[in-house]
Length: 477
Image (cartoon, rainbow, N blue to C red; front, side, top):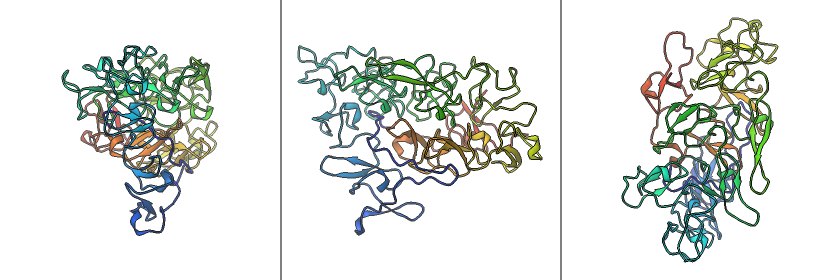
């Protein structure tokens, strides 16, 4: 993770996939017939390497993206804006400097109190009448790039030294990104930059701020204490990126209640509804409450959540720990639930899941599970353990990890290390060092054999032991 920037680019990778086989990371464009494009993907197809010209992200080798430099476009491994790339704010750039709409490696945005000529000079995007940078009146915290001495000053809850380490209250420290999306209050120009999914921009303005998170912290929002944390919609809070600032984690599969959404199919409840508006009337969309009982995939039990899973009407019958350790509802009445051991298909919840089968799960023993291509709620209900969006946005089971550029819902879906914003409101797999953090071990929800396999120990442990069919890294009870 780059200390100054958690920005995304304007050209998201192609996310087309079929929910079962590996996802194509983009167009199989080899960047030309010249011998200097010099790259190859793991499957042997040609690709464009760092610093060479491209037309889109699909041209670039895995882990790279295509940056628009104005007169040309080149492949780069940087997640933030490189020198010459288009920008609107200093926080769009690796250097924290945006000059005349282009990232500049020669400068950084100007902090509050220093001289300025225009709003764009300032980290706060506000140049006062006296010719010095001043606080932005639309925010109550300092945005990425602003000078700081304490994390409490920053919207991102992260104040970093130039090397990315935590600020020691002296030196040239600045507010830095703590996730692949921007926290509530941070400056923005597009909805997709914000964890909450809404950049609140007043009419006639080009820069706004990320809207308030609401009743609970959405994925990417700072959350304070690692572990089970009721301040997060997912109840899971971790410093998975190694920035020193824990943020709310996605659980994978369908999005739980109050997480941001774009379509009904993304939500466990099947309902993506307006939960408020921005200053210009733009809707704030959230996954809504399903009604009297909790549908499959929703968080249940623990951290203040009810255990009233459908269709049982109460109790803990369908409320079971998922591969993350977080309890999520699995629907079924007087039948063997998806993910549980079986000997015949007839034992499984066939009424709720017509496509369910009794087949070997990820650990090799027979469980009730959904086959590749079947619609799913989250990975624990699938025989292959993967539940990701298809080309139409419908969640479907798969048995292969998702390569870089493929649509994902959590890092555990990916062959690489991270599931990050695609710049259009969705998420794609990435293996860029900037996205991965320092830990090279297994992330929350991924397979393991012992605690030391997992990142974020001792908050995260490996649940190996008697009766565990497929051990994964889980939040410690």
